[in-house]
Length: 372
Image 1 (cartoon, rainbow, N blue to C red):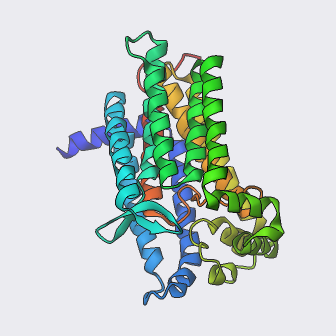
Image 2: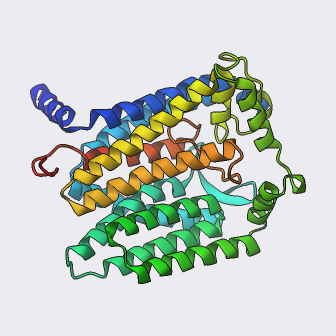
């Protein structure tokens, strides 16, 4: 039995893209280090008796994420599709539940309370929708007798409509960009692309007109004197204070006053305490992750795997860009985590699932890659 398990692990280790794996592990490690720096102040600010409350929870989800990552990365492509189909249906059903009876924070119902934890179904929607859309687009190209594009667009529209009902404008934008990217790579059809662009434009205009918090955030970003910019201004001040090498571990001040210093604004904590060099290293890790995944995608023989890996890498890259952009005051606040680094159990588990899918789809199997 032990010999069989060892052989399976050996086969997995030989076939896995270790560069991608090590980059993901490095990002998780960075998240644990920054959680140690930022979470005690957040726990004290929120009146928890244990200053390491968030650190313990972050460490728990990091360990659980490793299990998810390894388990998903060992799946076959058929089982990948099954997993993503079940996750997609489950996520959509749970998002409906959040709209009806979700835990409301800041005027948005995006979470369900489960056994003392907050579950955010939209996090699991992202990788599953990307993979299922990739499969449907690939089936259409392969001549399958199913209306793949129609079904994919139906799933996308259903997802965005439910997200806007929560409301969650940031996740809607991210899903739209990832879905559009997968569709573009699948073989551009201008009529379908025009339909997607029209839908996205209509969604943005509707959000501006009917969602006050969206209009307020955009107006505050465009006109700094028109609204509350405490979080972004504090983050910018912290980044400036950090300089090249930072003020030193534990010496930062942003974490004591910024409500989301351990989650949405963790990048500002890194910049303040560890400096520009550490910030560039974090950006470099995400760049390697995306570039490596796309390089692998170009060499894959299976069109479904190509599209899915491209979309998953795009999700990681765009989510990092959005989070860092908010910290740098380049884009309006979106309430989006920095992948693998920010505090957030649902986010970390869903990202681990996405990374596991990417690793599974890029494994070196017979015939998986084009010959040089």
